[in-house]
Image 1 (cartoon, chains in turn brown, cyan):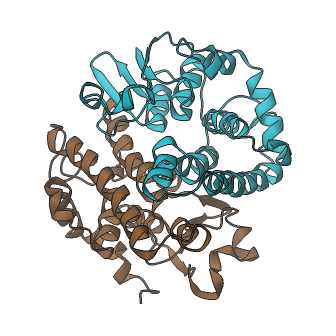
Image 2: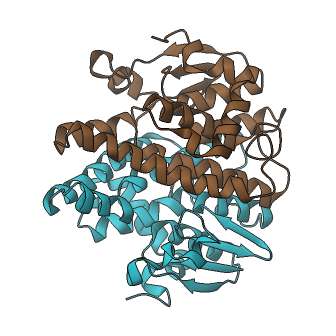
Image 3: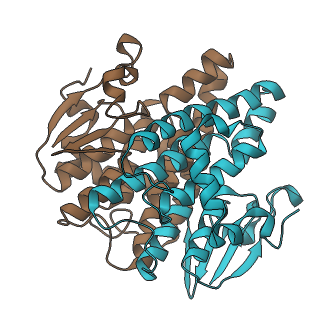
Length: 214
Length: 214
């Protein structure tokens, strides 16, 4: 397999965690999101990924986009260890936690959105940072409420073994800390993050451990 | 089953389509997103949905959130008719199309984001509408590129029977037209929308057919 990735991309980070959890070897192809006006926007990359986004996963003659679709594909083609629980209601619960991050927090704070706020709308730096904090904080507050009260929470989002929810949570917390959000205010999220970050697969997938890390 | 819904919510619309495709009866509970400062933000609703978002689906003693997690749950618990193809690579392709809408387009244009732009950032009406158009148009352009060129496209996003991709596409096109986007510029999207909208399940799920339609 071949993964087109950028070390700091949260979406690529999710897929890297899944690949390492399932111990699947892959070639790492760096796509620099800032250099040359964004290598992800070049025509040759867009033939692989029309949206001009990382990650893209190549598996044989398959070209796959969208991090959550890629993780579900890995789950279906390499079921061990499972990244989703067995029961449909539990699977829905784990997917809902993952989607709460992937649909309600991350899309508002990615690079192309922050660029639009700054360059097109002329939003000042401080208000742009406040925007960033606002979506992280409102998203983390409701995620914390869910995780703190649901009996299914363990050392990780669902019990003690990694699931799709942790795969989305860890990159989002990493990202928040990079933007100086005080994640200690969300004690369950912080506790889960600390535990997950200590696991080998999460360490191997971390931005600092990638070949294109700066 | 009981569905907490708002007639115009794209995310609730997705779940309504899935329920009707699978011919599952449900009670409709309206949650008015504008009235009383937003009924979805009230404490009693937030006990069901900590994010304060629609939809929420109640199935027996299960409370389920996030539209795509709910549709996957319905797919797992009521497999017929299937809303995802059989092969993992095809399933990934359909999920990627759905997520491209659910993660790259819709989150930027929903009510709470438009409110933040207007009230917190003070973005003028015209620039706010341009923001809305920008994310629809860039998202539809890459979705059109994918659908126009992939041999798996049929009368619908994947072949001729409805999938998760159509379930996301139809509400997004409906929403775009409401904001006066010229969707004729995306001929494959428009063609798929026209066909899907003619099917009974999609008609029954349409905003205008809901008990809380205005």
